[in-house]
Image (cartoon, rainbow, N blue to C red; front, side, top):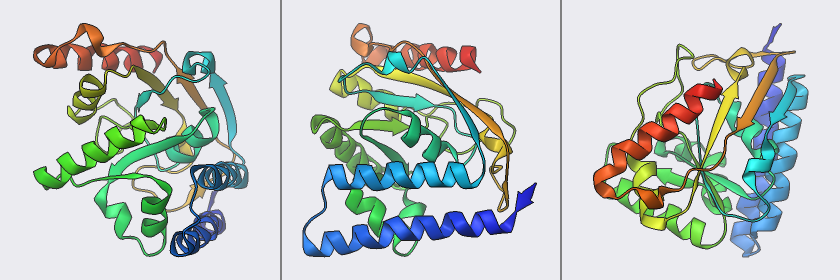
Amino acid sequence: MASLLISLAGAFETFAISAPTVVDSILGRVTVERCDARLKSWAKKLLDQARVTRTVRNVEHAGASEVFILMSNHRSLYDVPLLIESFPRTLRMVTKSELFRVPIWGSAMRESGFIEIDRNNKKRASEGIEVAKDRLKQGINVWIAPEGTRSRTGELGKFKMGGFRLALATGLRILPVAIRGTENVLPADGVLVHRGASVEIEFAPPIDPAAFGSGSRNDLMLLVRDAIAAML
């Protein structure tokens, strides 16, 4: 059943974690740990409010302490809380610059460590990749949706190269992730949240970019895409 009330409740929860983060930034007391706690709480509340049944498969592939570049398919805004709740450690995402223009929420995203990518501006896109490198050096796992946008059909779209450049530059392993069913909670172009959906998230064995040079970037991309497609 689609519900405007659940959509509004989700917006309220988003504001409820954003405002304190902005205040913390002003007071100079933003920490990774504090942001993690808020994000985990926010993710659980959004999924619980929508009565989403979650199944997590093969999370052992995420390891105990290794820093990864996560790559997944992207079908819904609910991919974000599902990934944040399911991944066992600190996680921040690379996301389009438009989301950073949302009042309060955008400022909170920036202060909590999310990474802005302006795909229409090559210079700013490169700056975003440098920020992502810095996050990874700090031990923060970074999530990228290589399709670049949510799928409107559910099919896995064409991958963009930015994330693979990042993997080759840092040498960090890519953790392929498949997400199933979040489009039944909130479709790509939807506004109303649907209650009672069942979703699954699955982690594949990590892929090491070390065997690939810049000239083999396309081969690395195809390997990761095939890993995600096989799970889907």
